[in-house]
Image (cartoon, rainbow, N blue to C red):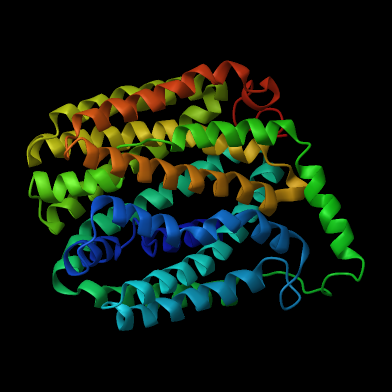
Length: 401
């Protein structure tokens, strides 16, 4: 569990959209290469191509051993590869095409690490009957990562810009060393000669798990929030004139509130059934989005980011719990990866749509707020149809699917 937490923390710090160098990358593309909001959203949609392949990565990680290990080999090799690619990115800052494909390659390496960690999370959570708590640990360390990101990302964007990518390179190399030195896993032979046929059957069997697909559909719905993401970045930097440091500090405030929400959830999930927590989280998420109508200066922005960060954490954590329960243990990495690849598609589609609408509305943010809140509220209509075997019990009570 400590290694899973460390892995998610480092992945959060090195994430190209929300990590330490995220504002440096955004301002480099916006101000140096002069991308519009829609073009910037398109860049991120293309660079997320690797994340759409997560199910195949999960199939690989579940069935083909790397250097004789089921998890360790993938974690060490692809953490080191991500570090090397981040190291090369400063060389590409003047070329859109070079940057684009380097970030695609970085995302492929990060995706492999993420997929392998997801498989470990499902296995450990279901074995211990602690899917809620381990999901809260994941969310908590991600919030801790965003806290650190909020503190330094603005400074990195102003003072280091593309050289800030070197920080990510160092962090991923450190993570590779941590996995190599501390993860203990017995070595065994590689895939058996008849394994490919069995693997295809394995993939087909996964599609017959109804609970997995219901949970995946639920995740896609809540991740589809047109209006936030790239439009919010342009609204902050262009309309309100916030500096990179202020934007980074707002991320810090949101992450601090999210971390508090993670700690609260670790207690709530032991006392309240998951179905009630899903109702509570989705309701808070839809309502909190409306507060962005008051997002017009730095003071209200701080309060709104704190409230929205807390409500988002309380909305997402029950869903993380649901996803860990719904993933069949024998398909741990594959099933969890499949769900999150669908979520990545949803995020990219909503960001592109939101950015296009933002430009059509002449950079008016009010319509984006209503769209975001309304799409979040739709999730409430789905909760009654979730399988009771997944949602009726509290964390540590009963068993996951």
